[in-house]
Image (cartoon, rainbow, N blue to C red; front, side):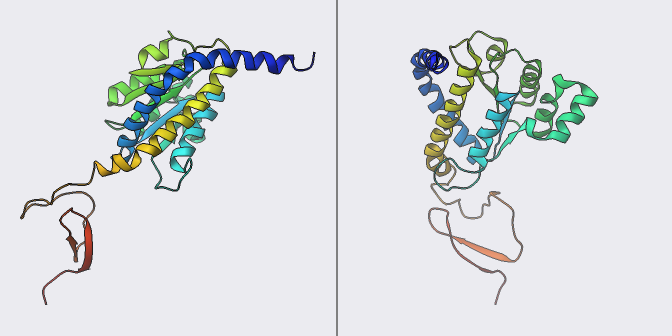
Length: 234
């Protein structure tokens, strides 16, 4: 009968939406933490398999590009998108290592690894968590119903309470958009945390960025640049 499939799918989606509403507190906190990490020079590494790979790449596109308003790009890498690296690592070390080796290559202490999986059992994602913990990354996961190995291996996880893989992936996409909304909302406050509230004491220097020889930079009382001119004496 026409309409049966759509109605059945929407029924499953509606059932999963009821407990999903409780995830907003976690997404808000992750958005704040991610905004602070990215404005502080850290990066987000993301990975998944199959449809979850597509959703992981969707997330990085929203951060490197933009979700709504124009802003500076944020560092986010979808590990599965580097096809030459994935196939080389898979060929030489096995498919279970395709993400773990990239985590060791790109990850730095304080970065965040976000993994997406409907089952929470993918061996290559579990290996990626092991590598991330060795390097010093924080590990998050979007998964299907908990408990599952990936949710338990990560520091925190957002499990979707549905046995239907399509519903899980659809709510992972919602989670991606809501997470990015919270990141963009938090960016001004996260950036403000990095601006010194008082000028440095006389005779001290900071290493906030590269130094250009022969250029004099003047700062106001809040530590912001107000004038730049050629250095040297007259």
